[in-house]
Length: 206
Image (cartoon, rainbow, N blue to C red; front, side):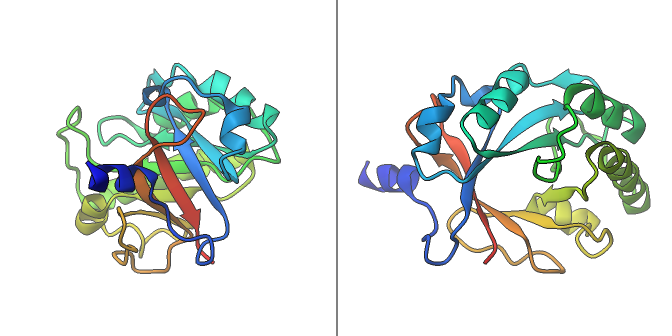
């Protein structure tokens, strides 16, 4: 029990990573953003869309709440190997308002049980580039790629697409990219006041 409580409260040391924040989705439950800000959260990302049709039910509320709390905000698209990049980009653009002050939009790259497709590396890289291009035209900033270790192992995205990288790895500092990462999702189970369910905790590279 002690070990689990420690894990739920663990985060990398501020002395090593001065800027830290969270990302949330409808799975996070209710969020009181004023309370979240008081928990030493510097920024927040909210899931906006997944694939070509799924929109996060809490995105609009979270997007507004993050701004009201005075936190920097960014939006996440969950990439699907089962939908054309153009349709996925269209869903994101239709969901996420333009905001010149927003953080770079994130594209999450991982395997999902709902999509068994495994296209060739050439096809996948082309689709990611197309998706990123449309999102970047909409947002005015380069996207950041959040890549799961298994996805990177199969498709080797980090060495092929020159965008900032967002790594994943609980407790241990990740080292599976071809280039240094800009952000690290260090926990997916952190508990903080103001959020009903555990949150993903992220730190920015020093």
